[in-house]
Image (cartoon, rainbow over all chains, first blue to last red):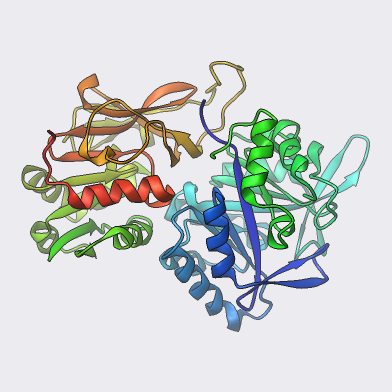
Length: 255
Length: 216
């Protein structure tokens, strides 16, 4: 017995509504974030992640209210990502009740921001989100992308993960852009390569289509936590079913 | 109306602690406060903390809260959480060595760069982050209604090693067996975050709000 592998449902929030894009485009409405977060908490989610995909910065206050409302009702760790660019953005989310923030694009443009954030708030609340795409097969190589996977950066994903941990990231949220929305499972070689390269926990994301994919992420991908969105939002599976399946595969979970 | 003060010394996120206390409060007023007089008047006090111990201790000392906490310990129930637990000890190895409050005897040690699972031999990640089982080794009013080996949420790279086993209220396994909670007289402290540990954590906070500071 020991530390449980975590299941983290992810809510993509656009203007206060939960949506889920397939390959970051086709958006489907999945409901009210507060209501969904409460349901996940009841089903046994280990943490909840919100990604604010609201395009306009004018509407970012909506996300602050969502976090405030969820934090008063759900007593498990909450992570907020999307639009975190300044120390002030982090402070606002932590004050609203978030426990961690995920920094993505801002880290790429200004890696020092991660350092500053970790020094100011502690590594425990700084998650660096990495969106990676495979760019060659032999040897396998992945690069990081920004802007929801549209912009290439030429930066090697493994080297980037190591650098971000060095700069103070307490956790890595790793999304395979090749797999996101495909429902064919995580990019396991990518997940494993990153997880073995860093000493901090790695959350696998992108591609979950069934419950066995979650177990694969832990067993083959060596992920410390697995994140999924659409399989939970549209009622295909509950978190509890996911945990029971993982437990049956010999993985320690919190039941 | 009874009151509980969450000591605000400018470090980290006190809001989740306050929100969890509010959730379980039945007539206790929850105050997040950096005013020593308010803390002195409260019936119960919570010392939270996140981030690096050096920064936490520097702020505690700058604000004169070291004396305040020592005073509180003499008179009312005190709950330390995470770095707030570590701050109660004598010394931490973090940040090339940091002296702490010395309210409880013991040190704060690092998990190390090569922590391994003692069965599989697999390398373990540091920080220790997530839900782990807490094994209660002391009968204590704060454990009331909480099942043995319940899971609580942890996130830390350093752990408390009390000077003697008599302080240990709970143990946890992560490569090694470490102290998950300590207790002595009217002081109780947890390495895990009750405010993020769903039902079990809320039960612990509810117990704290009822606790008179004695151990039967």
